[in-house]
Length: 202
Length: 104
Image (tube, rainbow over all chains, first blue to last red; front, side, top):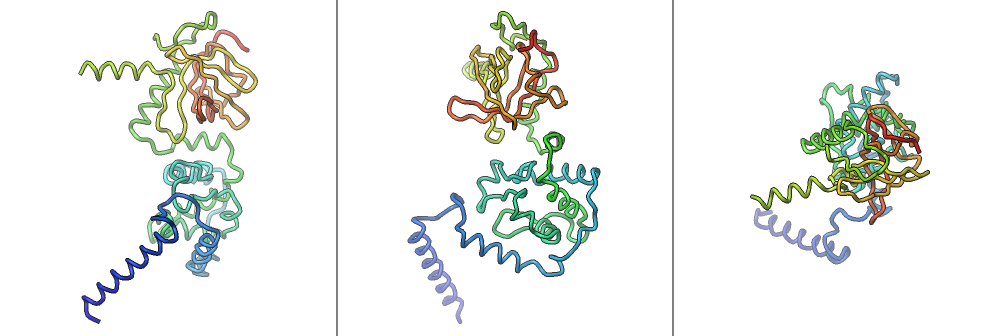
C-alpha cells in the first residue's frame, strides 16, 4: 500500500470517526458528565485483563503498623491527595473533573481489589484515566506501603487527616495565605462587649 | 499606579476572602455569637457572616483538636467553608490561641 493511500485512508477514518462522535454526542463530548455503565464495565474488565495473574496474586511484603501507616499517609498526602483527597474520597477540584471521575477509594469498587491489583495500578498507572505510573521501575517499596494506607482509608480519623494536611503540596500563594491566617489567629483577643471593634485594627 | 494601590487596599479590607482553595471560601473575623449549629463572625469590613457547622466540621485551636465549645465571643477565627449562595457551611474552623472574653 502506498504512503499516499495510507494517509488518505487514515484521513477518511478520522473524518468518519469525527462525524460519528458529532452525530451521536451532539459535539465533542469532552470530560463533562459521567461514563455510561457500559463504559465502566468495559474499562474495569479491560483493566482486570491487563493485569497479569502473577501481579494480581502478589502479596504485600509489608504488614500494617502505626509507623508504616503514618509514613504512607504522609506520602499519600504529598503525592496523591491533590486528586484523591487526603481521605481518598476523590472529592477534590481535580478529582471531580477528571473523566472518568476519580473514584472514592473507601468504596467497595476499590477495596475489593487485591493488594496486587492496587500495587500494579499505582506502579504502572492507568492509561486514559489520568492516573500516572509511580515509583522506580525496579524498586518500588513506597507503592506497597501505599497499598497499606488505601486499606486503612475506610477507618481514617480526623486527626490523621489533620496530620496529612501538613504534607499536602502548597503553592507559594497558599503558603502566604496560611502565614496571614496564622498571624491573624495569633492576634490579641477582641473585647466581646461591645462587639463593634474590628479585628484588623492591629 | 494610585488606582492599583487603591484596589490593593480595598482587597486587603475585604472580610470574606474567596481564596482558590478547592471550593472553600475563607472567612476571617471575630466571633460575636455562638449558637448550637452556627457561629456569627464579624469580618474586617464590619459585616456579620453566619457560618453553620455540624459533626463533620473540624475544629482546631492552634495545632490541637478542639470542639465547638472552644468557640468564645471575641475569639479570632479562620473558617474554611463551603458557600452556597449567601449561606456558609464550615469544613474547618481554626480558633485563635487567645480566647475571647466570654463563653457562650
